[in-house]
Length: 225
Image (cartoon, rainbow, N blue to C red):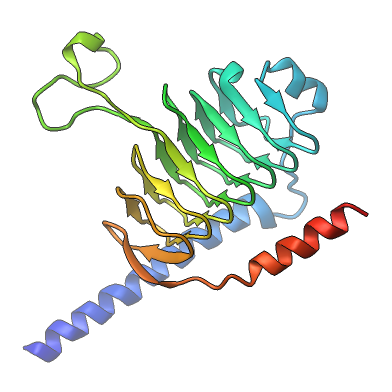
């Protein structure tokens, strides 16, 4: 019986890996590897016309991304937002930040900060505002605020944080510098710096290598030349 149970566990892991790998291959093929495909980014004139709070240089934003409250959105140098992303509310994006396809950034009133060199993989959901699911109050945006009890807390995604595909980041979370969040992870609590997290809910797996800091130093040094 124990052998059969263990076999089913391993079989489930095997199937999950196949599904995840096939899904990622499909996305890569559709958005990056199709011959002749080139993501359409807005021109500088189009970007300026959007009315963003501030824009750095060499910014790439897909024409297929959707933006709301542009006057509250700040974007730093060399950052990129891909197809079918939805960005709303108070958002501050640092330099060299990447937001991959199908991501949702809902900053609400308290806001979301993505610090330098951070990134969100395909389909991440980051929301700084949420309804109360306990049943004590009503929910959803069609209901007046007096009948609801919304949770509103700032989210901070630190330098060199990478968030894996289809992960969820809840209001109030601070992903400390250097963290790596595995695919399909649910993050409800803040993390410690330079650790790898994964699971539902997220648990600390092991420490993360800091060699990328040396590469950052080299990159910035060469950039100055």
